[in-house]
Image 1 (cartoon, rainbow, N blue to C red):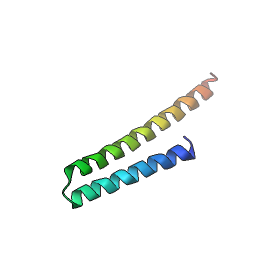
Image 2: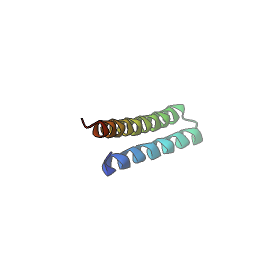
Image 3: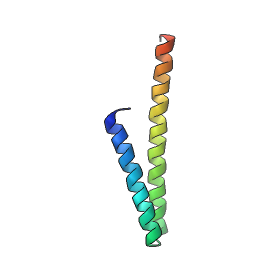
Length: 64
């Protein structure tokens, strides 16, 4: 995972949390849901990047 991808994921998670809080404060369920979706997307991207790194480590250890 590159530093750029990591930064983008963090920015997406932070903006999602901000949307969620704003939606809660203004009683806007659509904005709140959109914020949660952004956070889930950032978490899925992080998980994908970690799994790609893990597969790479296993391949390297196996000499493939």
